[in-house]
Image (cartoon, rainbow, N blue to C red):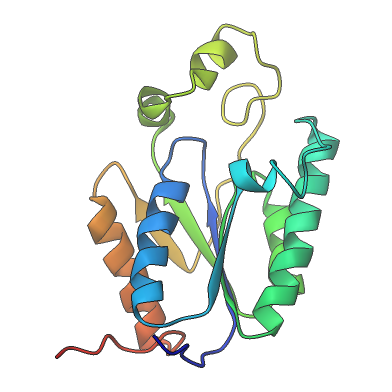
Length: 184
């Protein structure tokens, strides 16, 4: 399939661990690739396997993680690549910094109540955090600052993955960030 020219943009998925950021980004990635778009998906877990493997989970290391990812997203987005970035990124100031550094930043708040996120947790991180075994766990022993005015607000406890993805696709189509889907 030929690649489609489009403006670069950064869809920044923020929310608690287990809210559905990666799940939605993966489903959206598949739809955008079907449209022939150039894109990269950056995810907290996979980025930590390479780009930021030297970092831990202290506040300073989490800040450095977002700083490095911002640099990559900046390079990609200014070169007309769509970036799907899934990071808890708990601080408003850091997300505002990403917005200032990247091309066409679109904040997607992937929202779900803490209890739902904990129920979805396959790694057992919330259980450990609630037991005090993990310090500085976002949403439990460390703050999460919800976006004040995100471009897109998804409620994963109230809609399916497909519904969430369709809402994002519609938003992107209406603003001509992505081409309309061609139907045969």
